[in-house]
Image 1 (tube, helix red, strand yellow):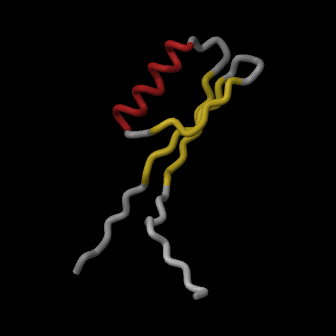
Image 2 (cartoon, one colour):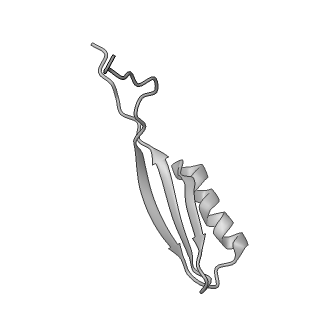
Length: 70
C-alpha cells in the first residue's frame, strides 16, 4: 500500500530567459516571441511587464530523450 505509481512520465523542460528592453512595442515583442515559437519550438511560460516598461520573459521547450529499445 505504500507504493505509488506515476501514470504520466516526468517531463523535463529547457528554460530560456529573455529581457525585452523598455520601449519595445507590443507588436515587436509578439514578433520576437513568435519567431522563437515557430523556428525553435519554444513556448511562453511566463511574461512579466515591470513598472519601468521592461518585459521579462521565460520560455520553455520540452526535452525529448531517446529511449533505447533493444
